[in-house]
Length: 433
Image 1: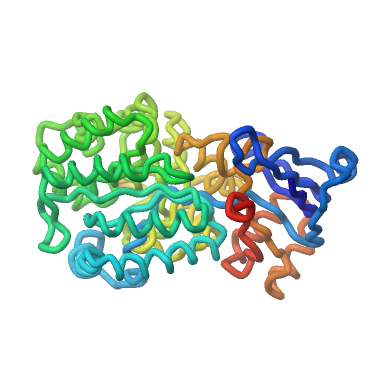
Image 2: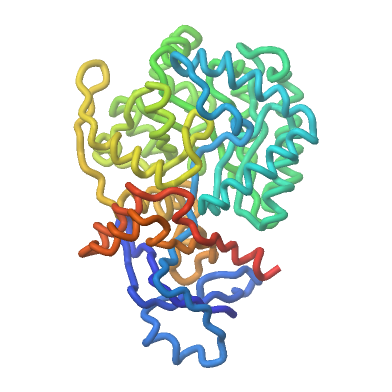
C-alpha cells in the first residue's frame, strides 16, 4: 500500500469537483490485485488510519485523475499541422498516404512507442484510439500499451471502398481479422478492443453489416467511428444512402449504435439524432481542436444537454492539433462560447472549469462505460493520476497564486497549461509490477 500527500482533485458528481487543499490519497490492491484508490480525503483525518504506510509528500502540487482521451489516431503523429482546405482533401493528401506505412511491423512499433510516450507525457492514462487497416498496427499498439500497463482501447480500421490502395482492405478478410484481434487482445490486462469502421463512405454495406454482427456477438467490446463532422461528408453519405433518415441513422440501421459505441464529432445533428444517441446509449467524442483546425463546425453543448446524451473530450490527433488535454479543454471553452446562426444554429454558453475538466476525466470515463473504473480518484477507481505543478511556468505561478477559489485555479491551469504542467504521470499498475 502507498500513500501520497498533496492537494487532491476528484469528482463527486457530473461537473462537481471535490478539492482537498491538504489531502491524502491511499492506493492499494483490491481483491483481484488491481491497484485502486483505497481512501481519499483530508490528510489530518486519514493519516491515523494508515500508521504503517509510507507517505510520499508533494508540497505545492496537485494530484488529479489521469486524463481520458475519447478519440485519437495513433498513426497520425506526423500528420499534425498538415494544411488542407477541409476534411476530405486532408484525408486524401496527408492521412491516407501516411497510414500506408503501417503495414510494416517495425514502423508500427516505432510509432506506437512514440505515441504511448507522448500520451503519458501529457497526462493521458486512458485512450480510445484508431489504428490503421493493417493488423500489424493494432498488434504494435497493444504490445506497447501493455508494457506500460496502460488502459487502452483500439482496433483495426475497416475501409473496403472509396479508399486508395495500401489502406483499402478486403471485406471478408477485414471481418475475420477483426474477430481474431478481439479474441487475441480484448480483456487482456487493461486492454480493450474497438470495432472500427472508419466512416460510412469508406465501408461497403457488407462490411458495415458484418461490423454490426460482431458488435452484437461481442457486446462488451467497443465500437468507434466518425459521424456528422463535415457537410461535404454528410452530402456524400446522403448520396450513398438516400433512404436513410440521417448519417447517424445509417449506423443505427447496421446495429452499430449501443452502449460502448463512441462517435467522434457529432456536430451537424438535429434533435432526432440526439434522441437516437440517448436512446441507444451511444456517446460523442467531442474534438474541438480538430473541428476548429479543419473548419468542420461546432459541437452543440446546449443541444446535447437538452436532449441528454453522453459525451466527453478528445484530442483527435492528427486533425486535432495537440496531445495536451489543457489545449483541448481550452478549445472546448471556445467552441461552447461560439454562437452560430444559419445552417448550423447553435447558442453560445460558458462551460465552467469544473465541467471542462470533468469532460476529460470522469465524464469521458462514464461515456466509455468505465464510470468508477478510471477518470476519477474516488475509492475503488483504478489509481491512475497526474501530479500537476501550478508553478511550472512563471506566468502560471503568478496567476495561480492569485486564485480565490477552485474555478479560478482550474481555469488558469486550462488556459495557461500544457505538457510542462504535468510533473509526473502515475500508472499504479505499472508501479506495482
